[in-house]
Image 1 (cartoon, rainbow, N blue to C red):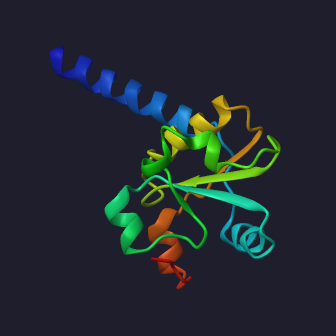
Image 2 (image 1 turned 90 degrees about the vertical axis):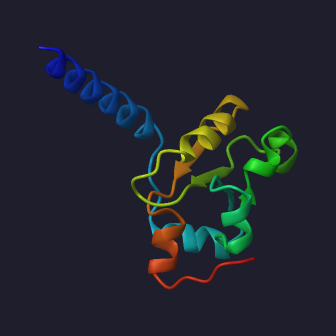
Length: 128
């Protein structure tokens, strides 16, 4: 009985995390690349300073370094596209940056689900 309770609890927690993670629409690689080229996107990398220094999506902001002053590094137009990403498609850490932008009033917050791993797997360039 105790084993079943723990399994049910774990399944409920995973469901809740997935429900939260799905609250921001995903942006495709093609759309993200087009928005970067057109300079129509602000990108938040939540992978931490070591990963960021080792290579991030071009123009991305290190969210960890700007958590306290996020409003200063985001555009003044609250309808601007903000995209958050983390390590890979199984990572939910992006949600902290996406939620922070949303709390600041941004209305067009999206998620690049493949993360930096997917970006690199597609042979896209990174910045250091």
